[in-house]
Length: 161
Image (cartoon, rainbow, N blue to C red; front, side, top):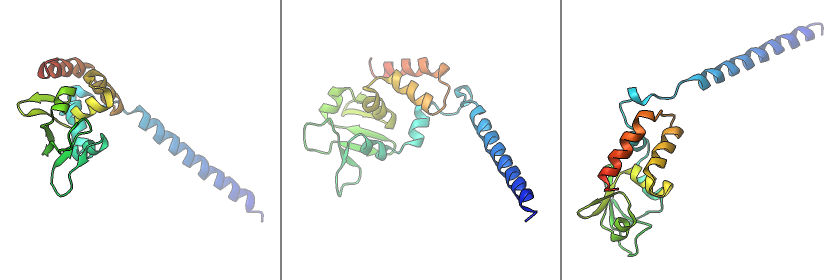
């Protein structure tokens, strides 16, 4: 029974050592710098698209997958009952006039098209590209200072806005 104080002291030292290690690991984690886009090989848009499967984003924003037909979806903006959106690799193409009229993605000869980030811009940020880019860059820990203006201008030119 005389060993009890020594056991308590040893248990206290172990607890303190564990607490110190946890605190140190937490401080190290917090002190890691954000990813510097100047040295990043991907743009924030490429970064988003690489981490978000297009089919998951389509479903997240209310698209209905046509049963029995590989890559056809019905947009939540469509007024008809057709499945006018087709997924082709990492891009989608919509033949729906409703999607094009709503300003979804980029206009093309067949209607409109885009990638997962275009859906994020439209549905999560009401079509505000700057807000989407800024929010995603912040959430992903990406520094956006040099990219925000460049991508914003390029997107506006590409979309005629």
